[in-house]
Length: 336
Image (tube, rainbow, N blue to C red; front, top):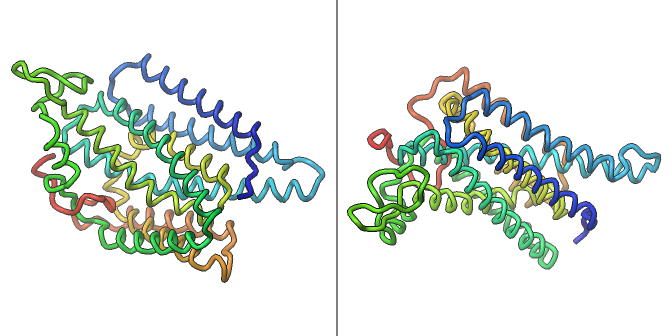
């Protein structure tokens, strides 16, 4: 499979991400456990978006975007557009992750000062998981071209399912994953700081914080299965697929705290995400008949998300809203 990723580009990307994570970890450890304000979340969100665009700009320059070689400029522009489109799609799909995280934190009454650490652990797990799944996906596409049709059909099905599930209330009480965890661990009734295990009456038990982290890991797997085929509809270049995914995930923690208090305002966003998934699935199914331009995919995604967000502000929700959660549907007010 052809890729622009040279050993130098892969090495610089790895170093770029490592430095970014170290800075984030240093900032988190220095601040300690605390409630993240909207202002702090907004600043960090802008920082992560800025870092992503700096990387894209460097990639464009490295590929010859400023040179005199017309072929190199064309390649640099095409790959930068693929990165931007993939980044936007992955960022948009990450919004549904945020709605699920909010549901989990509400259900388990996770103290605000502990949420930051839980999200960081979840993001690290997501980075490792995405890298592994992308490499496997790239290998499958290189070996079996028809797998693109499988991905397309799956995205089409997921988009339709997301449309019908949008607005439904999650039901964690009957969730199989939570039942499995409860069957394997003795769970303490209360938190014990940021510990994952504690002693209750001399018996070692898992704290609710560990349960939340395990569930977030399961959520990461569910959403990775949805989002990774989506980026392969834009490009099959492993370097673009992985970098756009990673940079979208890096800013997930800051975006959560920024949008956590706004999810009710954007109650129609899940419908927009469903439309985007159906479009991407159709694009993948038509890949050998007609290749929809990347620029059109970028514009369609941006316009769809913008329209659903604007409509969310103009049309009041009928009731409490959520995303297309992989947990079923039932009211959660009793647990909130």
